[in-house]
Length: 414
Ligand code: HAM
Image 1 (spheres, helix red, strand yellow):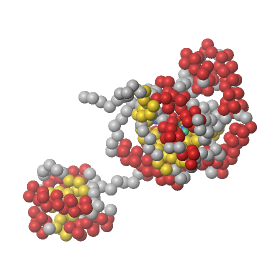
Image 2 (image 1 turned 60 degrees about the vertical axis):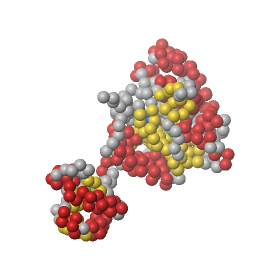
Image 3 (image 1 turned 120 degrees about the vertical axis):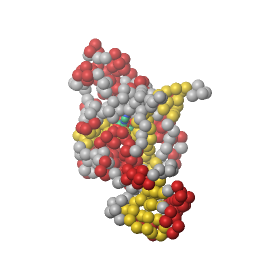
Image 4 (image 1 turned 180 degrees about the horizontal axis):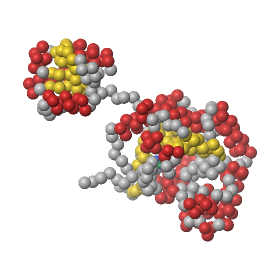
């Protein structure tokens, strides 16, 4: 038997109910903040991610699903949503007419990672991107919106971590110092860090090797290299977060795994997720539009993994699904039943029944299994009188009624 690919999952029943609940919560919260939906393709030119996310990142260098299409072009299944949304923004030319755009999106992403709890090769993100504004108040509001979204899913005990990666000149001064620090202990680092630090020293700080992390404990921190503009921006961000009553902790070692960030970065974490503790993460990317489109335009956003949210969410918040009314019939009343079912559905009643000719007992059993509140029984007497027996499973009450009365009773109740 052919099975689903490693690190991927079929989703049905409960998983779908949770996914829909998460998406509905996202739509409700994001639309309150003026965000509109965007859909971009799942595959993009490989170069978009190489240039946008950064060739030195784990995501691009190790984890992409990249292949040649029939015309020999290198294309990639998107590992994240930001690069595609930025491409769409640039391609639509919105920066010329109406640069302040706020978009949200959701859908599958692909990363060839070692699967574990909360980490899959196909996963789903809900994300937002806001273009055209560079103001710490916007950053604070986006972080607040992320918290509100997770709260609507009933997730508690979350920690918001923030940091500043500074503007490019602050980062340049910092990387000179960081490089020196790394060179002093090069022999104790893994092969990956040994080569990676030359092109992108910041990236080594999120190396997964414990031995490397031990070495980086006393590495210089970016915060001490922020210039006045970046450090004022960061101080203002904290002020606005306090104003919006967002509890946060500062994590000077938070660098994020993607290259496009500058100034504000943040992650929302949960203790209940094990190693993959980050539920929602994002930051500002004021140079990304220049890298991809030669346009000077600021941007900020975040994304959250729906699988991680589903592991943490409070399921009791999900509304009980409306159960179908179950129609029970007999061989002699099949055609009568099909007509009644049609009328019920025309009156917005959710109906289920068995196509195969099962016994009365097994049809009633199926109704019980589906948790139907009402059963409609259509026997020969009912057919002759153009009526139906309506049984309320909750109360045990039952009676023979005209079809209009059945509709009234069921619709009045649901
Ligand atoms: P990211 O930190 O790579 O950021 O991913 C964001 C979130 O996606 C993670 O916090 C996690 O919940 C989920 N996630 C990532 N990888 C996996 C995986 N293999 N399995 C399950 N869930 C996963 C980004 O993707 C940025 N595009 C976020 C952003 C938007 N920054 C600015 N705008």
